[in-house]
Image (tube, rainbow, N blue to C red; front, side):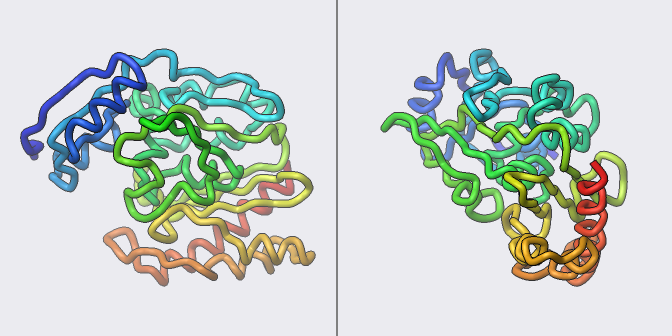
Length: 274
């Protein structure tokens, strides 16, 4: 299909992007475009103005920042997947990035675009939620940091204000042991019917769920069971608690809840084998 008519502007800086966003109440940021443009072609999204930030090269980096790793919002999925620093210090992210789309998508799509789009079926947000990531946001009032637990609000809705730009993602150094991402999908390169991210942090295990609600979710009941000494199979029985998955052409809500239990068990077993 053909998108609805829209205006197009190229941002010369983050500040300029925020200014352009303020010029139209129905403006959207364009980075890699692999989330927004398909929605525009289907007319699910109909922005009146596209603000292109894809040329802001200073937002593409992966570097150490004290006890955390800082990732620029315009870093491509391909660069996350093959980052030696991330493989050594936060191995869950490059492992999960390999599940995003196909090589063409990973060469153009950005980690920040995936996060800011707020799609609950996207792979990277649940991995970042499991990692207790922080999101650095720039707007007219300056810079602020939003914890992952507060960032995702609803379907395609995040804590970003109408004139705010996601500039950086910060993740902890977890090392290369104790991580897993399990993804069930009908065809290669599809969005996840269900996905599960698991990572060992500070002696415990965090579990994130993909496509199990209006936002990426933490499997709190699974984490509680693990802290109480449950084995992977017993902990996985709690995977559906607190979830509200959709019913669509890929499966019913009940089907997703059943699949989640299987994938959580597999992810925990994979994590323990690392």
